Image 1 (tube, rainbow, N blue to C red):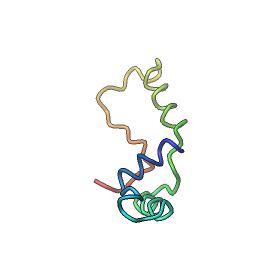
Image 2: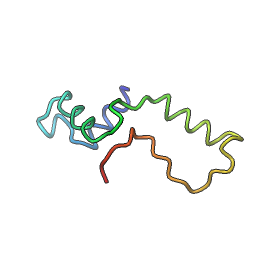
Image 3: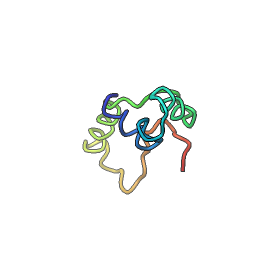
Length: 73
């Protein structure tokens, strides 16, 4: 999660720049997601491994969001 926190802060507003606490930044991120949890880097790795495996060989040119269904365009 530590690697994703800076990415989340950059996407929503860095606490140092926005004046918001990390708790406020996290709450803003959770408010935009239907799945109320932080993304685990292991889930991203599992998707990458699946796509690189024989099981993913027929997947081509697809968008596979792995962002906890974040509701931001």
